Image (cartoon, rainbow, N blue to C red; front, side):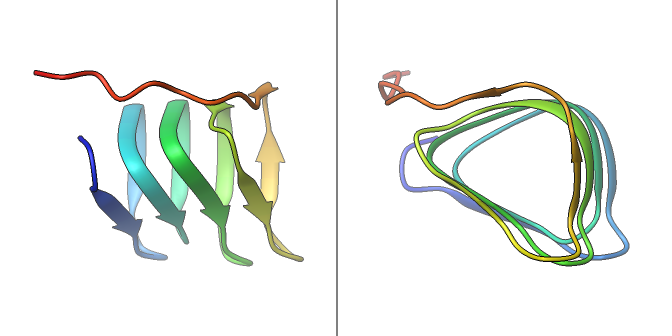
Length: 78
């Protein structure tokens, strides 16, 4: 959703699709991630997913396995 920010705490375990404007990941995600603005993988993040976002930050210590597609994503009106 436009303007949304999702924060996944270190204890979070998500399997599936995550969509947001901005996404801060400290926990575990397996699946697909789409962010219209930015994805940040914190040092505690463990991500096995395909990520689509115009901007991604992977901090030292984070684990990422998957495909990355970086391009501007249009906001979809609902």
